[in-house]
Length: 246
Image (cartoon, rainbow, N blue to C red; front, side, top):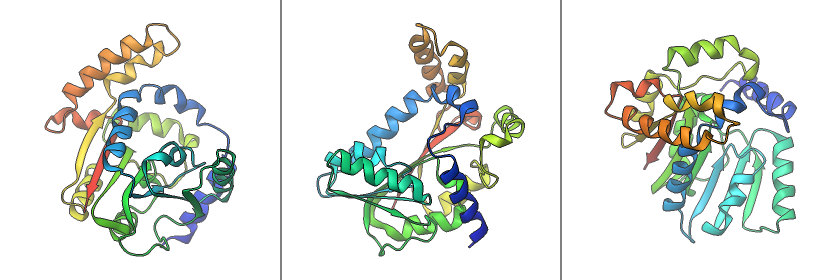
């Protein structure tokens, strides 16, 4: 395992606490449909007996948001600063069925088959993919599901934008490539993949307009047709959602 990589990620995320990726925030506004579907998939798989893991939980908000839908929730993150904030938020909201730990996501201390449901948002592309996928497989219960949203590295225009804005991300980030998708399907053969946000990006200039929601809805509908998993155009997508089943 690359200890330097872990330390670089820790330092970056500790240092960037409370700050946004300003160049990217305007684009994230077009991910509405993906975020809705992501949340829906998680809620469908949770029940009152579930043990739930937020894999790369940041400041813990998402885990708290689902706190009424599981028996026990656990959040892990490499950043001590973010975990301290997560603990404070849980205390402020008097939510007692969650725990947070500073932990390397590629080498957790959990027992085998601990979690019924695992979620992660833009975390896998920060990690050694093979190590993280095998760790997720180890700690996920049989019959459980892990749901992730991740950026793709298959659109040449988006790839060029990333090259022109290197300071907007850490040096170790690697959005998912076609070979990474193949690796995922090797480790989790029953993976479901959904693709999002190509035409929706055209709504970005209208983000402050009263017509933004309508424009985004139309473009997101076009994406739903053009980026379906059987379409050759799916590789134009900016993001994908992955559902791993064990």
